[in-house]
Length: 388
Figure 1 (tube, rainbow, N blue to C red):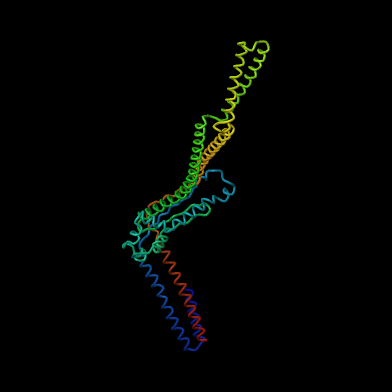
Figure 2 (figure 1 turned 135 degrees about the vertical axis):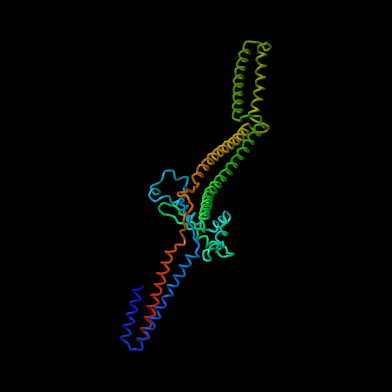
């Protein structure tokens, strides 16, 4: 900046030599006024320096490093995940960053700690504390100013930095943020897992109800028809009829043999014919049972029984599948759970890092000096063209 002023002074002096006495005197006077105005830059810097030294409130900063870990990270990783990182955890980290800067986080912090009371305290200077009766937008803006969140895209590690007027509140502030972030991450995983398990449990309840209905229908059918198994009863009855038919054939053969050499009134022949008659009557009765059951054929009864039995078997298989699906959903839901890992725990700060007084003063001095130099050069150029 001193070099710029020297060049400007030389330019004004040369212009005074090459021009008439009137313009030269006017330029020198204008140049003197311009140099004297630079004292306003120094005055502004001095005023800000006095503010930092005697009035500005110190702000203590606390840092913590976090990492969002999924339960399925321990499984075998694909080559894409190995070389490119876990994209799911990166998305979870980005989601957490958005949440920490949201209004929901602000409301959570306001309930957990006395955020507004601390930052609106009269002990802080006017420019650092929260304004009186702030709106929700003003509170959120102030909250974001004192809570800085960033994430390393390569490692996925999230850095959280808080600022407060006391070391104790700075530590309390960041601990509340970590606790709320952990609840948020766990809540996402648990909500998804609960919804999936709840859906599978409902399907299992439906399968159980259908199985109970099928079992009850089959039991009522068995009680109504007096059979345990239609297939077994039919086979048993059919076997009985077959045996009776075989016995009837044998008895008729014996009857014919006796009739060949005995009289009609012989006792043996009469007994043989009586046996044949009784067996024929009983065979008719058993065949009637096989052909009809209360007006229905035994085949119809067996077909209905078989349909009910198949329905119960199918309901049993569905229920078994629902049980397996429930166990699988519980295992998969665990893999979808998220965990917030604290890589670096927050500690109580021992010195105030903000405001950065020397850095801010140097930045202000350089900025005002550059602005002053630019404005001075513009004004000098305008005057040169006006004199020409």
